[in-house]
Length: 108
View 1 (cartoon, rainbow, N blue to C red):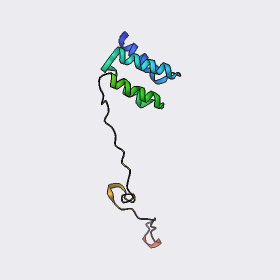
View 2: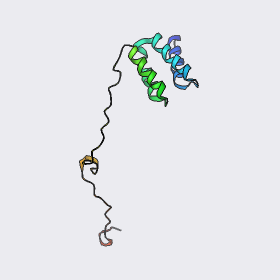
View 3: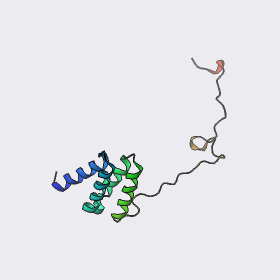
View 4: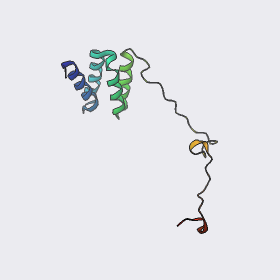
């Protein structure tokens, strides 16, 4: 592993796992400053790994400052209407209750 690759790995690990949010933010800033657009996949990985909304926000801002404002397309969340609420997989209507087979119709 080259020194540059090693430094990239160290910054990525610091941004993902450091106990201090400030250290994580600094590592993200260093990634962008030192690697520019080459840091985009790492920033995406960090954003997908972290549970801290503040770090996710910093990753998005860093991605934008690295020269790629639209690194990921926005995901549109659809809220199902009451009209479609009773539909199952493939749009098939689901029944309101469970149906039981009669004893006669069961296979043994």
